[in-house]
Image 1 (tube, rainbow, N blue to C red):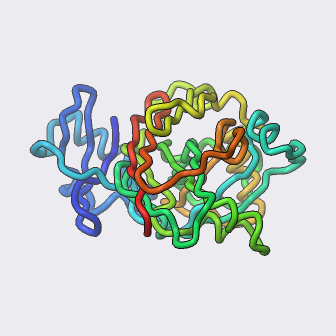
Image 2: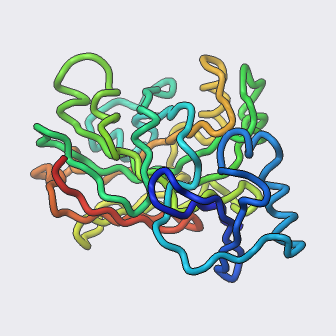
Length: 282
C-alpha cells in the first residue's frame, strides 16, 4: 500500500495506491495525510477501508505532491554513511550529526528545483526519509524507536555547499533554500517494507549515475537515529527525518560538477519509487 497526495500545490488530495497501481480517494477518511491522520491510526484505517472496497477510485493522476503535508519539522543526519564521510575527508562521527531543514522546503517528487541566487555549489543527496507516526520522547532503546515510525519515503536533501560550509554559522542555511526537499512519490508504511536497513539508493544527473549505495552502510541505523533524536527533542507525528546520503555527491567528486539550471536529477530507492527534477535558476 502506498499513501500519496495528488493535485496542484496547496490543493493536494489524499490518496492510496494499491498493489495493482489503482488509485483510491482517501478523503472519506481524512482531509490530508498529516500528523493528525498518522497519530489517529490512519494507516490501519486506510488499509482496512481499501481491503473492504470502501474507497472510491480516482481518475488518472495529475501532479504528484509530497506524500505528507508540510511537516512540523525536518531533522537531518549528516555524514551517516561510511563512504560519504570518506569522500568528504571527514572522520566517522562518534554520535549522529544533527541539523535542521526548513519545513517549507518540501515539494513534490517531480517538481522543479530552484538553484538559489548566487549559488555556485548546489549539490544532490538521495536519502531515506523516515516519517514519524507517534509522539517520541526519551525512548528507551533503538528497538522502541521502530514502533514510532509510520513509514518511509524518498527524500532529496538538496544542498548548497558554499552556503552550508563557507559562509559561517550552522549548516541550515545551505539546506533550507526553497524547493530543497523533494519528497515522495509515496509514503510506504513500515509493514510493507521487509527491511529498511537493506535498501538500495541510486541517483543520476543528466542520465549519468552518481550515487549507488545501500542503507546497510549507515553508520547509525534507523532505530538508533530515532532513539537518539528523542533524547534531545520531541518528535511529533508527521515529522520527517532525513537519514543521510551515500557517497557520490558533487562535493566529493573530481572537478566538483555542481548542479546548474537545465540539469535533470533522477533518484530512486528500492520499493519507494522514483523521483525526477529539472533544475532552473531562482
